[in-house]
Image 1: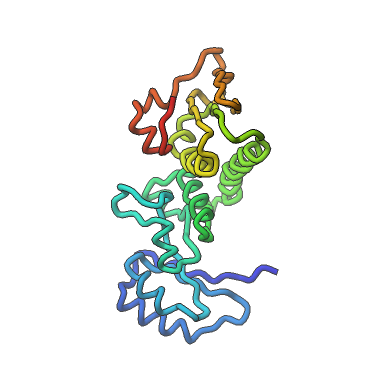
Image 2: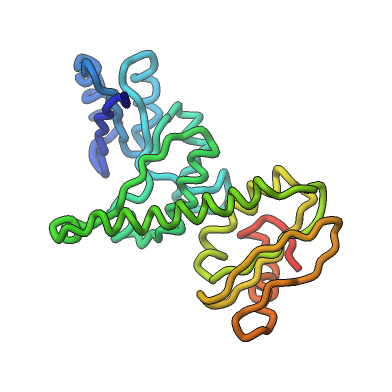
Length: 251
């Protein structure tokens, strides 16, 4: 049976001194059948990390950026959270969605990155109070499941591919996935199979497809619904943006 988790999201409240005081009190409270988790603001994490070591209190972060490092002013990476002994991270909170404008695709990148770095993501459904009162929570959850199912389908395709020593993978996709969803997957795949090269092409929502060409023999088989070749994402990005998104050259 799964152990219940009592998680406290402190949001933008309590500085380091107040955090120390509260954690000292929480250490006196020991739930019998539940795990206790606190998610303080980033500035409190170093002090909190030291205070909860060896106690029943688990430590989590309120947010993270899906990259390990880079020019992302004001963000914090999963690697940094691991160094602070965080076990959990909140992804997709309604305030991040509706105030900060985070999309499902971007939140999906966070979840994938968190798992890849040994963090347990707490995925919030992201519904507003109005949506919850209207009984639309299940509708929001179904939308999130659609994204997760798509991830699983692509993972299944990749796991069934053979002769992955070298070659090309041609992916036809839409703009939102090309810019928000695919980059982290392509980067992770390329680390495992460095001699496999990608071509990312964009079309409309009616287009799509994936083909693997072994032995560096590239023959594009993907077409959009008009029968013409779609635009290369590498050409549309003029190279530099593609390298930032995918960490590699395109063609």
